[in-house]
Image (tube, rainbow, N blue to C red; front, side, top):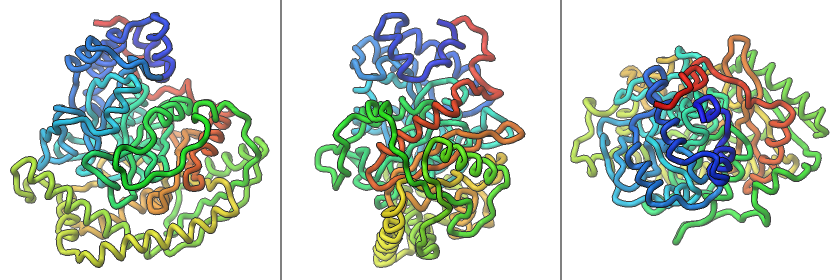
Length: 486
């Protein structure tokens, strides 16, 4: 196999080759490592390479899961692999090591993935771009002057460029969906509680964040959800699972859906004209596929959601920094925390417990308001973000002029459509349906009812078949590398 062939497959495609003994897992690892070495100097997506660990894992025996032998990358935040140093995007937390796999990491291994490295994240994940001081900016393979999004931008840039077909990601305000939109990928944020967060986390970010992954194909997303979803021992709560596996559900004909859509965020921020045009074209496509499409949007308390987001994020930033400080033995300061993140830490430090509890109640109120809307609609369609992918430096967490509220407002002005569904816990997926006139991806976000990933994935599979994105290649891609494995 050459490197162009390697990058033409999704995860299930590579696993099928392994299972049929047409390629060895060691060869896939070599190809992935070669891609990292060739492309990462431009992208700055991969933080550490775990080649020896990957080869040892293969030697020890890979579980025969759906993704047997497939190279995989893990984002340096929340999830952790035993004895693999991570930095959480922060100089404060540099080279933090956990003594055990997190439950999700154990499930990724059981699915057959072989981890070849770790990927960049913004500091403690609080940015819609990936430009941590500790690593420097991660760049978009479609255009190096732009961001691949955040906070899972390292994983997104790696997949989009062909380094691996699947990579770990997580989402506390859009951090799976934003980079999926910016980088031309499939990005599902599952329902709250669908993916285990143990053993060290209960409900990340008080229930607004969830772990999962980014992929190139809907079928990879569906099969991965089958592989890693479900409660872990002693978890706080979990949503009901469907009677069939998602990988079977996506192959069934989808019933006509009632889809609401809007180009107007609840906050009223302006939306780029190319994003609006892409939305209108997606509405037309959904109509052509037999769905009823209506312009409508949920009514909810926008100010309450904004305040709840500020409080929950800053309280958790404070807690994460305190935890990282204990692990590293370093005291938080302006020397090891980015300026805006330090302001979030100080804001969270001064917060009363009653204010955090009030924020959680605000989210519950908003969730009920939005829930009423979904009594009438199966799916809600919007652009994923309000603009084309940001230029490098636009979202600068090291800007000393910003306080905690100004930083939060800047993130969610850039990405005003995603955060609502972290609050409600509903599943939402970004699909790479359109491209801008200057060759940047434009994602469309589809949100479903609570615990109804099945409908979203069926619709996603239908849209992928109608408007395939498989053959799109960015400027920085493995197909530009010499086709012999070194």
